[in-house]
Amino acid sequence: MNPKTLLEEYDIVPRKSLGQNFLHDPNMLDKIVSIAELTPNDLVLEVGPGTGLLTERIANAAKQLISIEVDERLQPLLEEVVAQHPNLSIRYQDILTLDVNKLYENQPYVVVANLPYYITSAIIRYFLESNHRPTRLVLTMQMEVAERMIAKPDDMSILSVSVQFFGRPQIAARLKPSVFWPRPEVDSAVVRIDTYEQPIVDVPNNQIFFRMVRAGFGQKRKQLKNSIASGLGLNADQTAAVFDTSKIDSRRRAETLTLEEWAMLTRAYVALVV
Ligand code: SAM
Image (cartoon, rainbow, N blue to C red; front, side):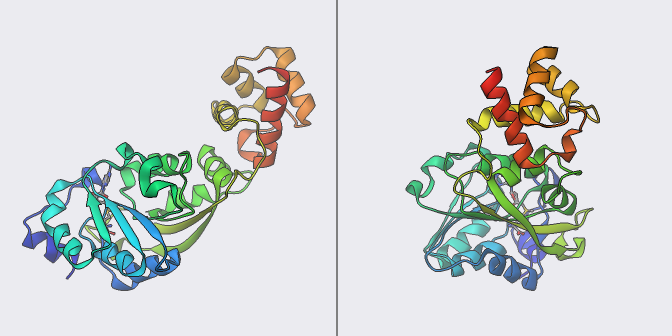
């Protein structure tokens, strides 16, 4: 059954404020599961099962699935999916309130989600910055966010630096608005992120690395020496020393730096100032 018919049967009207655009194309639903390369040993977490069409496919492919849905109106409909899949359980809460460290008792797990677009970045940050990171994430999101995530030096942003610090993102499929009901206004993409066991660059402390990155991007189109001095509260001598030690031209702009260059700046800052 398609999502429109299912929701009408249960008298539920989709809520735009919850990012409720349901994917109804069976080929695309199958494709998302195949991109995730699930095996019967995999433990999976899904964000936002909605009408359960992706959920049932994940449950068929994986060992165990926990799905987190904030909208309790969907419970009667989703209970029917649970009844047919003993390896599926659904919790009705906001994903951002889930204690991911307790999930699956510290065993490896995979995240698959057709994300609610209003909190795409918050959800990605939530998983990547947690102490119990998934081994991979297969996420449907706005095309524009997907493209920002896979950007290369010259077009980097806080988002691309943060995602590429923890994992390798790739666009695995592109989706037109017509595969959803109701139709969103933008094109979408399925992004697969394979996470690293350790961040890709060597930094003494992740928090200080991100403080450096946020400072660097803090003042749009300014030279790094200005944005970093003001973002980190450094005087002129300290700023000059950080750039001399890391051998990075202080006139460059944040969007041009590689991850290794951000790491070099962080190491110099920690050695000289912190
Ligand atoms: N998985 C379904 C599909 O592929 O058609 C639904 C995807 S729809 C884009 C996003 C889903 O996330 C909706 O079911 C919505 O209710 C749910 N959702 C929205 N905000 C949420 C939150 N903070 N925590 C958990 N689920 C949320």
